Length: 368
Ligand code: ATP
Image 1 (cartoon, rainbow, N blue to C red):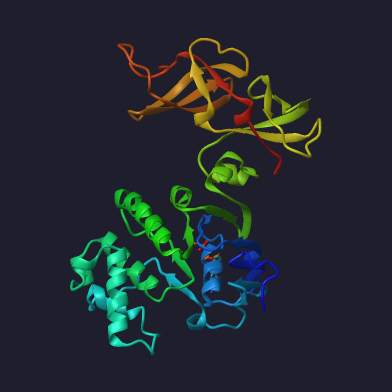
Image 2 (image 1 turned 120 degrees about the vertical axis):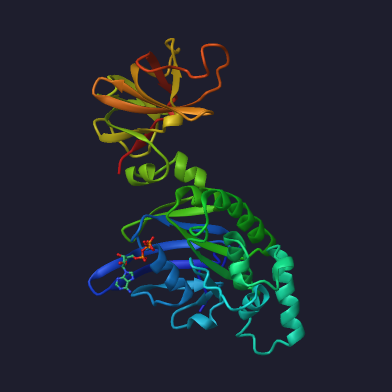
């Protein structure tokens, strides 16, 4: 059977998974293009691994269908799918050399000659830059290198789809950052479609062409990292990706191209990005990211501006995080320490009176 939309390389249609009475995945619909790095992002237990396991064929959906490259995957066993799953633990064999581990990825290719296998192993080791470590055992290489062995093994059979379960979780922070870029470069060179499961928002944002944010078995939003961050569709997504200041607000009117909102916690009327469908009098949430707030000692001209006092301040060197009190409300603002001179680089100090300003384009209105 072929998909109605052949352009979508992977198509997940109305997929749900129930374990007993518990619904782990709820009516997921999404498509992934060929060669994309697509992430499933969400907290523990949101169903992302279950969805990944259904793609691999380790679980069958309770309802819904999965099409890969035009083929319905229903009833297709894992070993017959053009899919490879790279586990969090990497599952590489400690007693085998690096090259034997990579060669193990070809165990199902019964028709391959010895020379063909050797050539593919060499090609994969070159791809992940481990040629010089071919004869070593896993305990003789670093964690990052072990991750690359697992990747080389996973890619050896040239899967159409590579599923990566928390691919960087076993690495320390510094190595993780470096490895993220390596993964992206290897993906680019091979053109294989990657589906990455992660609970780490930074990892998803850096690696992915698009991200699906999941909560309680449901996909809450799908978009590019920029779309998800700049245009969150709900309070959940806004809060899950990055930090955000949220305020209760009421729509007071429309001033094209903006909305006007009454925001009691700020004591001002705010001009915000318009959202189709909202009406005057509607209760909404105003969300503003900390780094979108400009701080100044002097009153800024125009725009959304309020004055508060610095309650707390965390100095990180290149930037600072401020918590600013405004009546009973605490607002977070993130500012680069770019000022030079004897006064120090910070915009403001503890207890200073300071103005906060943000553009209408940075004022996100959420209805959900
Ligand atoms: P984590 O990041 O912690 O791995 P996750 O988002 O990958 O979480 P899943 O492993 O997909 O979450 O699990 C989703 C929910 O389904 C969890 O509540 C889990 O306990 C439940 N679950 C998963 N597999 C089974 C199973 N075989 N039997 C019963 N419940 C299961």
